[in-house]
Image 1 (cartoon, rainbow, N blue to C red):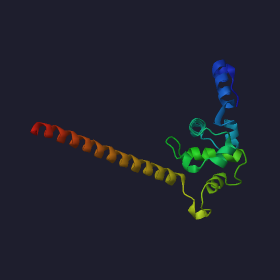
Image 2 (cartoon, helix red, strand yellow):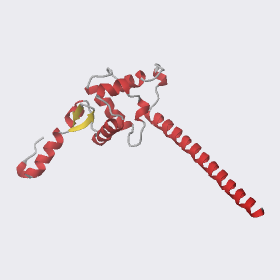
Image 3 (cartoon, rainbow, N blue to C red):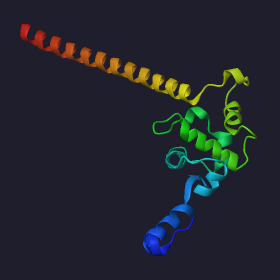
Image 4 (cartoon, rainbow, N blue to C red):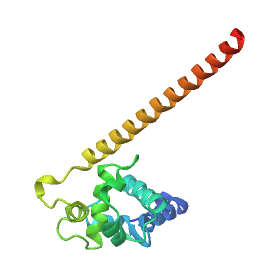
Length: 166
């Protein structure tokens, strides 16, 4: 792409050139520029930035191969990470030649007990299950806290009223 200094201005041209050449997706020590992702037909740059942040900060992976071999799909069912980010991860697998012709399917099969094509669950379903289990756990904790608080209130009430009656 031509970034003309005369038309765009030197500062704008330099900023655009740096943006094009800077790593967009970083997975541990592996970096992918916009051009690297475009070679495997991936143009979801915002999802790539979200994926970078989560893989490096929260999961602390070494590189793309580490994600492929060690990280389970359920570990990525996190807020801010959707199916589009998973497609970006598939593009990263493809760019690093991990998982053959269908890298995402290979990755999912690698981390599940069932090897049948019929038993692969979509990422949306996986996230829904994760959110449901989290919501159910929150509901159980809420009820336990409420019941404990009620027992404490009853105990205090009965203690006060027994002292008045004496």
